[in-house]
Image (cartoon, rainbow, N blue to C red):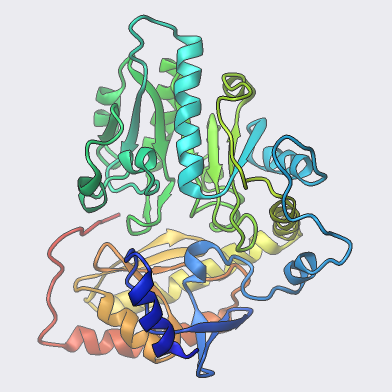
Amino acid sequence: MNFNQIAELENRFLITTYDRLPILAVAGDGCYLYDDRGKKYLDFLGGLAVNSLGYAHPEIMATLRDPSESLLHVSNLIYHKYQAPLAETLARLAGPDRVFFGNTGTEAIEGAVKLARAYARKNHPADPFDRFEVLSLENSFHGRTLGALSSTWPEKYRRPFEPLLPGSKFVRLNDVAHLRESFTPRIAALLVEVIQGEGGVVEISEEFLRSAQQLCREHDALLVCDEIQCGLGRTGRFFAYQKFGLEPDVVVVAKPLAAGLPLAAIIARETVAQASSPGMHGTTFGRGPLQCRLGLKVLEILERPGFLEHVREVGTYFRQQLQKLQHELPVIRSVRGDGLILAVELAVPGKQVVRQALEAGLLINCTQENVLRFLPPLIVERRHVNDLMAVLRPILVRLNSSAEAVKPEKNEVHA
């Protein structure tokens, strides 16, 4: 079936949730995606930070095709060989002690919130129990299931499903005074993305993060770091919070963990994990043998000498090229991010840039109406950055000189 046939079939039978780009993907290789017409796209979206090792990575493909492995699924009532080693590796890399595996990021956030409430109830029993509130930040995005959505800031996501989870509150971005004011004996946890991905690649300040950790310790509330998009090597460190020496109580990861298959993890301190007991939480498909084998391979590759250094080096080069363009073009308001999670905030809507880039064979993304977001595979090289700039620069030059450019009406975010 060709693109038009597939698009028509989806339009007829799928529930509408996404505004898709007009390409039908059929193959991928490294940093490139190919459509059904044979057109080649340089992918700086990376499956929204899922394809961290690019397409058809030879070691990932070998793991998938290993003829000695036959198990796709066993229930959580049965041991298999790969879950425990993967948990051990994640705990060693992250710092906390114990792991629960699920399927998706939003599911892991739900589990983390449940764990926070269970910890609060166990360690601070009261009648009536009121230590159930969860703080998150303005501009945050933690998922679309009901509990995670309750801690997601944009009103456009929340309003259609209200009333949401009771006790979900928001703190002003990087406002330490408001953070202190918001901490009460009712707080069970603080959810924080060290770099807000969907929010426009906005970095949380070191002062705010250190204050958050201190307040969580003082109030015995859990500091939960959402590393779903910015973790697992994306910043050139295994986890974005490691840049500041933070020691979170709970870490949540997902997207790239199993190289494209669904796998998420909640990583928790021993004392926090003790709040859970058999029957309090579960999953059907999380921790499958195939996913865990892939997760072990992904982490093995990320741990190799020079891999994360490469991410930092190429990320620095990429950011420098974007900053040079910013100095030339007033249409670029700011450049921000770390490693290979970067963004350009424009003075005009960015959707037209995404469409023109796609026509030129470049796959990027726009979030917050006017923020171009870049999430390339971590194997990207300088030459790929140069190819991207060769496409992006003339598009932004034309946009900069256009007398018809219109400023975005909302959702502007400044670092």
